[in-house]
Amino acid sequence: MLRMETVDSINKIIDVNEEDDPELSEKLTQISKKHNAVLLACIAPYVGLKISPTKTVNAQMGLSEEFAVETAINHIQTKTDVQKLMLLVSSPGGLVQSSYKVARALRKTFKEIIVFVPHIAASGGTLLALTGNKIVMGMMSQLSPLDPQAQSGEGVVSANSVVDAHQFVTMLFDEVSLEDAPYSYKALADKFDGVDIRDALASLSLMEEYICEILEESGYSKAECKRISKSIVRGFKTHDEVITVDKAKKLGLKVVTHNDFLEEWNLFRDWLGKYMLQSADKHVIRFVISENLVRT
Image 1 (spheres, rainbow, N blue to C red):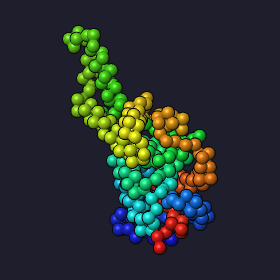
Image 2: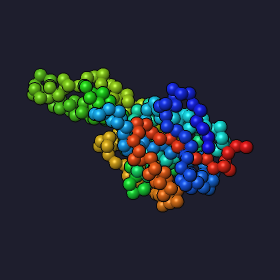
Image 3: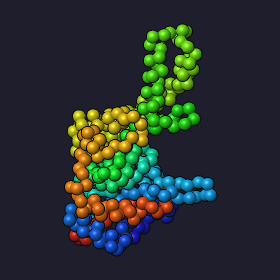
Image 4: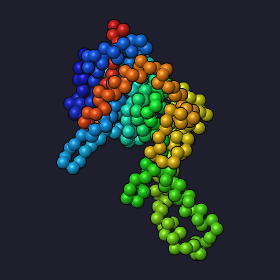
């Protein structure tokens, strides 16, 4: 078993290693051998880490995940030259920057990626799922829109909501002058900050650029990238809308059902089950490489 020799300060904030459960590892190794692929799990446990009597911290894409995935990739590359990856993603998302950097690192490292989403890959987790040349989904699988969150006053809301609300208020003045507008119209207009609106528009545009880059690396045409990125960023009612396997297909994503990979699907669900209910404040990163793939 490969031991992780990482700088102590980094090692304290990451949770990454080869899978060490004997029974599970043996089964996963057989899948790795069958597909000539590295297996990698990126799992955010559903139970947060209690750090005080009143505060719990949940796992989300951030600094820990950036260094953890980098560490995993570095160790994988010391053992094998294989460039096929089977990736398990279970994540509520997190920071846009971190999600993008992790997705980009995976796409730059592996030529072929098959992503498995047994349950939830939301927000930044959806961006990770888009690294797949194929995305395997089942009945309970969930992706989500990728509309970034923007600052509005003292809170954070969907950038789409900021833009849509501004457009709604602007329409109120289409048929009435500012001088003749009722007080309620003026009060609504006064609530908007031009800088917030500009930042919201910029964040939507930037997210579309990130998605296009990842999709293009995943084998989509430029036209498909543009259409899918616009739809997944701007085409849904709320940030929490569930994108099922059927909706994902309608978006144009390269989705297949779990029945196409039934053995792998069931085993990846077991892999998720091992970690999903443990208490943690960071994603668990585990990987498996069969012996036949190890560089001699």
